[in-house]
Length: 177
Image (cartoon, rainbow, N blue to C red; front, top):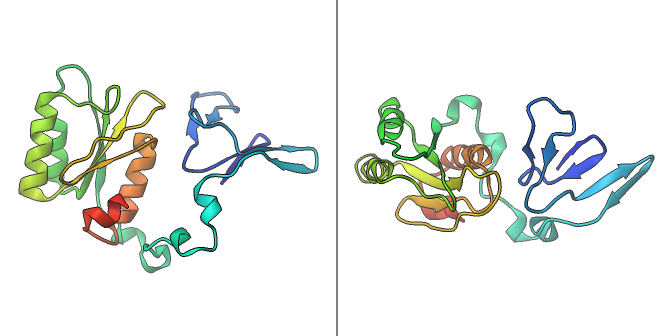
């Protein structure tokens, strides 16, 4: 959870929306969980995941106490734009990334050149990709071999989740889950 300016958000859903304003943090698709008014904490909704608290489904297979910063793999973000080449993907692969998040247009679309570079990175180097949108809100659902749908995660959140997941496993199905 995240609380700032008397507003409570789910960490997965929050994003910074303004470069200067103190009230910049928002959860564009779902809004705040609750508010703090004077001495009262008022919760108006719970995340679906919080409803699983205390159950086996709540537990993550990734124990963060078992890794250090040096265990974290290199994971990059590549933004799509009209006629984007695949050079950013190829450069990240040359640098040794294990994962790349694509910030696509609309529902996660990327240019044909980026798509070709992504396919090469997957098939020749085993890089894992997460598809997200650069629009600021919305979901991405398309998946494929070594391509995971980012759902409603923004590119930055997807990168952190992919980075942590790849620190524990190369199993794309476990990461997808």
